[in-house]
Amino acid sequence: MAAANPAESLRDEASCSICLDYFTDPVTIDCGHNFCRSCITQSWEGRDTDFPCPQCRETTQQRNLRPNRQLVNITEMVKKLSQCSVGPKEANLCEKHEEKLKLFCEEDQNLICRESRDHRSHTVSPIEEAVQEYKEKLKMHLEPLRKDLEDLLKFKSTEEKKAEELKEKLEMHLEPLRKDLEDLLKFKSTEGRKAEELKEKLKMHLEPLRKELEDLLKFKSEGKKDEDLRSETEIIRQKVESEFDELHQFLNKEKQILLSRLEEEEKKILQRMREIEMQLEEQSSSLMQLISEIEEKSHQPANELLKDVKDALSRCQKMKFPEPESVSTDLKMGFGLSYPHQLKKLITKFGGLDWWMDYHKYGVNVTLDLKTTHPRLVLSEDQKSVRQEDTRQNLLNNPERFDSFHCVLGCESFTSGKHYWEVEVGDNSGWILGVCKDSVRRKGELTLSPGEGFWTVELSYLLGYLALSSPETRLPLSERPRAMGILLDYQAGKVSFYNADNKSHLFTFTDTFTGKLRPFFSTYSKAPLKICPVPAWELNSGAQN
Image 1 (cartoon, rainbow, N blue to C red):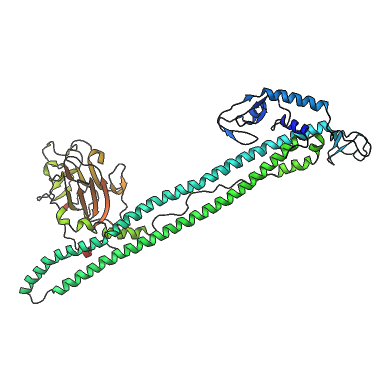
Image 2: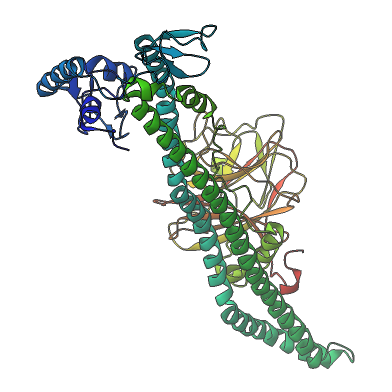
């Protein structure tokens, strides 16, 4: 609201909004507002950046203070005008005694003359002193109000940014979920093709069985009928189709559950953010209104300033707000799959279907290379089994032999293609299996890691099952394998490990291969590791539910 008359307006323009007195050494800041140099310097004390204007709250990055010499002259003229002229309200006389109103009664908050007997027992002071005292009090209350407003506006700005932050977090959670669902749906889209392939492969396996059946029927009167084989094939086909249907239903259910959870969580957070934003808007509006009223009152003439001044101070003291609540954008709910164990079982059933049905294409007959065997290791005569002994054998220390690490390589080496072999680990409680470069160091201590040319999995006495990656990866197996399957895909740069008992996938290394790769075996147990023929797995002996 504007001042009552031009003289008061002029006095306001010549006054600093911080100290509420006439300008002393006035300076202009970047937004165009003017302040005493000492007032604005004190207001910005302790800041290195983000300098706010006490009047409009606009912030600047640098402390730019420009002297305003013209305002110095205007301020001096306003001071002289104030001394030469007496405003009509300041010249008021007491209606009862026709004396000039020169005193201020603290109890009644009224201007009085010296003749007034009604106020003799009250605390009174000269108007000039009362004005100065209350200006100081108003100034003292004004600074914390401005600070509260600044804090509120900062907090409000921070909360407004959280909506974008929430969207980013939701997207961060959604992206891997979309990727998982996309991969699984791609997997599901191939089920028809795989089912057909499966039927073709079953037919391929059934033909020699039928031939054997015909031969057997020549010598035996009893045996399986062709109809029985067809019946078994149909049962297997129905089982495969049923399990693919189960996977399809599971994925659809998961998609709906997860999207519903995300939507509900987003609604809750955004609703609370809107409530907090409205509350901050109301609080900052109230603060700005009170600051404006206090600044206006500080520039009023004596009789207007002292009128209801205690009420203004009381409102300053009562203008307290509770600590604003910061809305967390952390998503408290989990957005993983609801039934990860169920999904793992489903994937286990189908994950290996592409290659294990064609095991005969990848199976390789691995034998152990005596020239690489550590002296503490003993090979079987057929070079298919290895165990550790307490004493060292008297073996020639040729360049190919490992002299420190208890290991042996397979005779075979690979530079392309896919190759699969199995090792029966049985009760052996300390072993390492996998592949390595033919060029690895044979003498002294070894570091088994992909960087050193080893891609291996270990059963450790202390740590259990580990993939010897960099860093090592724990493998939390639910059941102990009796046999391990190793699949090398040279072109794809992959070495995969399987529980050969149930064909479940355990771990895959991905790298870029160069040069020859060889099967790797290491044992610290007298229980043997045995290389076994790749079995013709029966389809209905798949992963257990």
